[in-house]
Length: 375
Image (cartoon, rainbow, N blue to C red; front, side, top):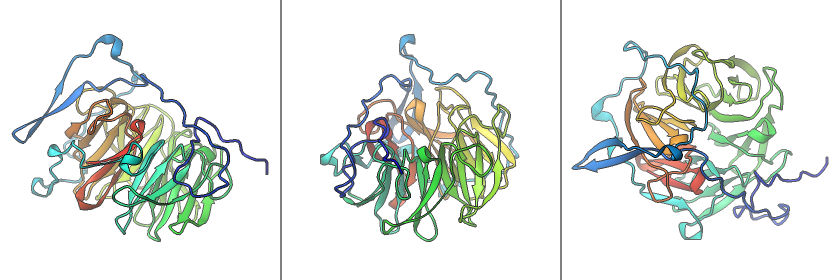
């Protein structure tokens, strides 16, 4: 097989790797400025209360990444079959926003990331971070110290090309969407490659730039097949089961499905970064409702990516284009939001992956700032 030449736009020198034959040393790509608008929202707290205040931005500062034209948003019916949240059992997300810990930004933070896009909390309290530019999974202590890493750049088994997301299955194996190689890879936590499925293409059993990935209670694997504009469902061994949705502007159709999560009520929530909304389905693909829609005001979204649902049914969304985190009730009503564009603690630059960690907190892959913020 011919030798692979790493793409300088997706491969950076990986400080996680302890191998000596990882190939030439490459520098991370230069940061791209003014890709999206600064969020015109600020989070203010006074005597325990939180309010979101809009402030005007000069017209020349506003940059809309995607055209929201023709995207229609339906109202959520009061009879929607969404999980009901008990206020007494709800976590106090309105008091969140200031991170309790930051991992990354160089050696002073314990580790240096290049493009962290997904994060998992492991059973032993360690963390696993997927870095798209380093093409690897890094295992860290809760304090951010590197323990080991998985993967290098390439298209052979056990190599990655711009991985986007992952989850831990019931056998404690990493299941990774290897987006640049148009496949899914499975690794055990002992750093051994186990299996793969998928290849480039558009027929039902093929993948084209897969992004978000999750499993259901039966261990079936749901994949956001971004360029094929649908969600595909496979058995754990890679056998194709069904497709959810297709390309289009109607309810239940996709433009670019990004990330995916199940609710406690076994409903499937999918972010669409080009329709700027979240769509909700039954596991077999029946469309239920949607929320979001393009905008900068609270409850609206701009290129949403990462999504996670807590045990009470609260939906946490990385509002990537608005550089903030939004938290919704399961019905789609916004509960709170926080974050502005910047590099200070509590600010974000294109946040993506969201993962729950121990002690009831969640972590945000603050991708543009090359760090993890634990909220």
